[in-house]
Image 1: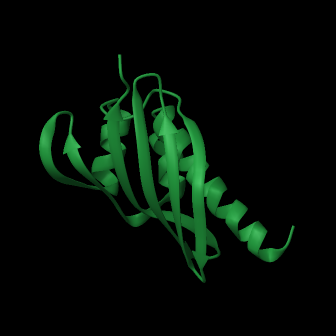
Image 2: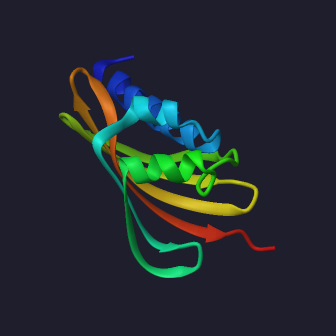
Length: 127
């Protein structure tokens, strides 16, 4: 595996840990991968229209209280691009009841990768 492939795999592993933290409602795991300035920005919030922005603290609280997460999801990396210390990924996720397309920004600081932003589009699966 060359350096570029290793970098892409490191970015994917960080994203996988982020997703696992949500799927298992594990704020301690999220703490290990979320950047201090993390933001989740989404269009709509449980049927309420509008743009909603959640900080790292707010996001972890939503996961810990099981408002977000708690359902295992399949993961398909549609793309991962690395630009020095920045990376972007387009990820398709599916749980038992929801489908997600997330655009995730990952940054490298202090020799490791951190989730900086998540922009999910969430739709219910057809009944």
